[in-house]
Structure formats: structure tokens, C-alpha cells
Image (cartoon, rainbow, N blue to C red; front, top):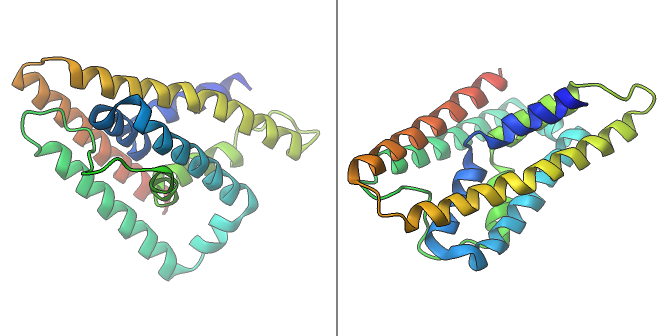
Amino acid sequence: MLSFALAVFFLFITPGPGVLSIAGVGAAYGYRKALRYFAGLFVGTNLVAFAVISGLAALMLSVPALRSLFLFGSAGYLLYLAYRIAFSGTEIAFIKAPTAPGFVAGIVLQAINPKAYAVNTTFFSGFAFWPESLVVETMIKLAIMNAIWIPIHVGWLAAGVTVQRLNLAPRTHFVINMIMAFSMLAVVVLATLAQR
């Protein structure tokens, strides 16, 4: 169970569309307006988990045309985000939108997030620790995942709000942008490899 919790922590804390976007919403709109988006991400994360647990995700991705459409659409969207981050200039380039994204936007982001499917597949197809009952193990895994997901995403939200308030040098902004862009590219590569 400890190895599962550690895997959850490290896979959730690494930059992906969810954490980068919640940081962006926090940076652009503050805590109060980000809460609707946060709630959407939370619900979306759990919907993806249930899609993986139920086999619905596997069923949908077993259709080659749907799988290719999903993979290329998701990879294209994440590459676009990485491009926007890398070439955003000297300002901190968390993902921004002209208006604050809400609850539905959070759900949609998780629904097209390839990292969410890859991570959940890893969590629920491995790390067996309750051989007496798959149902009990699944419920414990969901509880552990949510108990770790919430503080990590609150942390990224706080990071977005805090970093945007700092008066950092342009070179520091550039370095942060590049780190975030390469993190997004790593998510694309890992998601593509997981789909093969």
C-alpha cells in the first residue's frame, strides 16, 4: 500500500495538463475564481478513474480509429500548450485563458488528458495489496488517490498565485517557461508510449 501511495504522489505531482492549468487559473484569477475549475478537475479525475476501472476507457480505446483520434488530438493539444508556454516571452507562462475556466472546463480537460488515463491504468492494473477483495482494494485506492490529489492540486494553485505575485527577473521567467514546456513535452512522450 505504501508503494502505491508513493507512486500516486510522484505521478500526480509531476507537471501535466491538470496541475499546470490549475496553476495558470490561480495565477490569472486568484483562489476564489479557481475553485470552480478545481472542482471540475477533481470530478473529471474521478470520472477518468471510473472509466478505467469499469473498462469503458479500454473499450473505447480498443477501436483503432477512436484510439488514434484521441491520441493525436490529445498530443496535439498538449504540444500546443507546450509551444504557448515556451514562447510566451518573459512573463510566467502558466496556461491562461481570456476568462476564468469553470467547472465544465475542468471536467473536459481531464477527459482528454492522456496522462490521466495512463496514470489510472497503472494504478488500477498494478499495485495489488488486497488480494481478498478487488472491490475493497479499488475503494482504498480511490481514497488514497483523492487524499493525495487534493493537496497536490491546492499546492499547484498556490504556486500559481504566489509566483505571479513575485517580481522575478526576465531570465528567471524564461527558465521557468522552458522547464514547464519540456515537462509538457515529457507528458506527450509518456502518453504516446503508454498507448502503444
